[in-house]
Amino acid sequence: MKAKKILMLVGDFVEDYEVMVPFQSLLMLGYEVDAACPGKKAGDKVKTAVHDFEGDQTYSEKPGHNFVLNIDFDKVNEDNYIGLIIPGGRAPEYIRLDSRVIEIVKNFDANKKPIGAICHGPQVLLAAGVIQQGVFTAYPACKPDILCAGGTWGEVNETFSNAYVNGHIVTAPAWPAHPSFIQAFVKLLGAEIKI
Image (tube, rainbow, N blue to C red):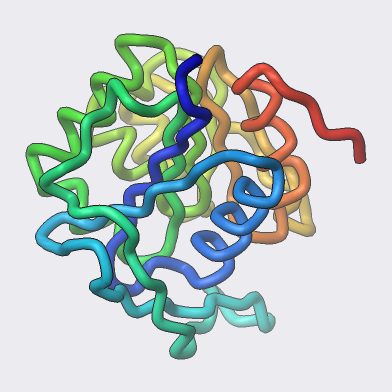
């Protein structure tokens, strides 16, 4: 039987909750989760940032925790995984420049394996060309990018707590959506969480 392994693609200044909560939740549900970052190895750390909604025109940013990677990026073999998570924060804007990241995302998409991208995570999906037709969401600043790629914008509710499923891809606007985002992702994996 194939291991229930999930891959997370992260980088420095990934959003703290968006990496920590899915990582720990999926472990709690019995999945093995490998977190990888371009240019880094198992045992290396990425810095995280805490983004919050405090009434400003955009989110505020504060230093978060250090998140320890548990696999060498160069050893990632997407055939070993049943799903992919791409957290948000600032990391997606630059990890999408790595050709191997794009290759990994395209492989998951071509094989219709579940993909979850939250907040700015859809920037990586956009760079890989996997957002075209369908309803997707992200942090609202990414709306023009989704529309330019041919996607339909999934409106963000006032608490940023909703998620959209389009085929094998689930997207959400920010960490307040974790209950709906993680539930939808796990359902795409073939399991179900009752909330």
